[in-house]
Amino acid sequence: MGTSGSNQVSRRRVFYIPGYDPIHPRRYRELYRKEGAAQAAISGYEIGLKPVPKGANYGWSVTAEMDGSRVETTFEVLVWSDIVRDSMSTSIPATYLQLVRTAWVYIASGALWRLMKLRKGPVIAALYPIGMLLGQLLLAYALGALALWAGKAVLIPLLGAVGHVIAGFAGVGAFVALLRWFKKKDGKLFAYYLMHDYSYSASSRGANPPELEERIAAFSDTIAEAMQSDTDEVLVVGHSSGAHLGVSILADLIRQGRVPVQGPALSFLSLGQVVPMVSFLPEAHRLRADLQYLAARDELAWVDVTAPGDGCAFALCDPVTVSGVAPAEKKWPLVFSAAFTQTLSPARWKEIRWRFFRLHFQYLCAFDRPKDYDYFRITAGPLTLGNRYAGRKPSGSRIDHAVSKYTSVAA
Image 1: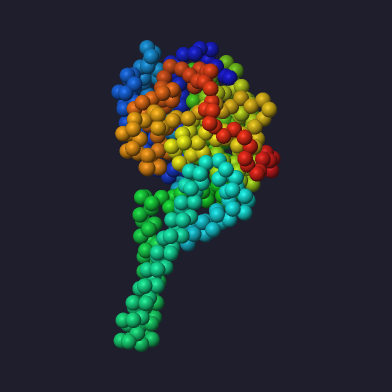
Image 2 (image 1 turned 90 degrees about the horizontal axis):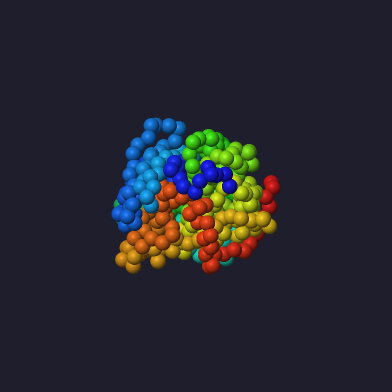
């Protein structure tokens, strides 16, 4: 593993890769500010944020006093929200076409059945937008039929054939109006959002679209530059869909020989990962090759944290092994649980346990009964990721056997 030669960190660069999220990256700064202050109050350390000069990526600076050490950390968000927004800018009919195509890809390829052998939560989350959108379509059809029936009953006796036409327009109008209302309310229902999310990978059957490959290359260049800087650790954090982007970014970085032997320690923290949703698809050759490659490298430390309480993640599923590409010399990732039911008080757990999207972001938030996972100690504390979890055993309940039907690593 690349190392600065010291177990202690005084300067760190963190690169955060969001999941499939169209929101401006300031959201992550404010979340870090709020939750970092809460965790500091609970755990007895000091942490503060300040702005940094505007650069290519959105970021902020963190100063922390932990365990008798002062650490300066610079955060950058590797933004791909523009790609996300472009993929979401579809009409209602186009979304229903995505529904049919996505369902067909996962069912016909056999990926859905294999995913169900892992965790039910994320599979239910994947089926949710299908059920919700079909339910919306059914309700809109029922409302349209009711409007048509009522219009005929009232207007035909009065207007004859003209009444029939007007009733038809009323039925179609009611049908369209209700579908538009449902889409307008998707900020609470998340049916369209999730459909676009799953459709993005399914549309290419697991291969990276060209625009995403270009962004991965740009992100690799950014991290390569950081590896040449005077810092002690370069930490890449991939959350949700950002985890599998992180795998490919770091695999490219190491393949290209851009990790200096005497440079900063290189660390990768994957949180709430959904890697199997992509790696189980037929054309995900690139991702499977990157998983296989990264799992055996000495140039980095890779820790994968999930929790069974997070129904949107493939909790405790080793992303390399379940994808069927574990090499004989496999070293990574270290897989363990954030154990929400133990690290959150009963009152706090009761408050958020049914807020599924909030739970999916809990890895980035404060725990009122923290154990050995603390996002703020990892990103702003005095130890590298590898040193922090040196000797840490993986969770015994992890799923650590091959499940994917597709294991090819070359197109």
